[in-house]
Length: 205
Ligand SMILES: [Zn+2]
Image (cartoon, rainbow, N blue to C red; front, top):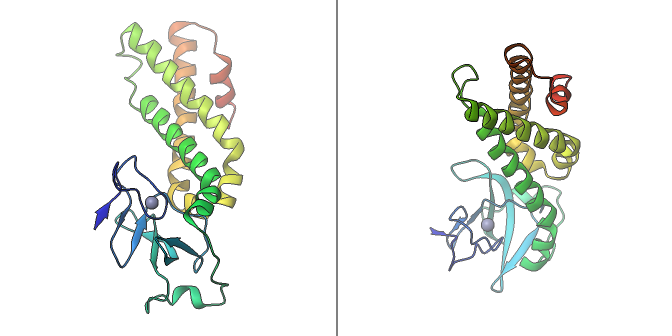
């Protein structure tokens, strides 16, 4: 199969930043995902491709497209309207909010990983300790920001929910624990007043 890359944009989403989307003549596995409903189609180089489902690829999270009219395309036939003409441009517009949420989730996971990998408070040097608290504060701030929008994200983008909800829930719980640990360490070991951001998470997201 071909992969997305600098000189080969994904036919479905136009992705060039990495090789996550793959395709051949019989299917497209698009890792950007899509807001299309099963049976809705896009046009790529004059050929129609129908969106089939969200659970393709090794990750189980890729959007699967197959040539429209392909004999195996039975999934969309059950009571779904089709075809819905969507050019890649229209699809791109549809996906803008999805891309944004996807980026927000990526940043949240990255901030979580940094906080999670911070050294143990008791063995950390002073500069490491400061970096650890900073990373926990940063992850906590992103958690609070994300929490406000989670219901909307999950409702509007079921495939993002399918791929990320368990991990997000786990991260939110872990961040709350890390923030509480940091608060207690600062209070009892360092005798410093508890920062507002740390207190906020300690009192529950
Ligand atoms: Zn793609």
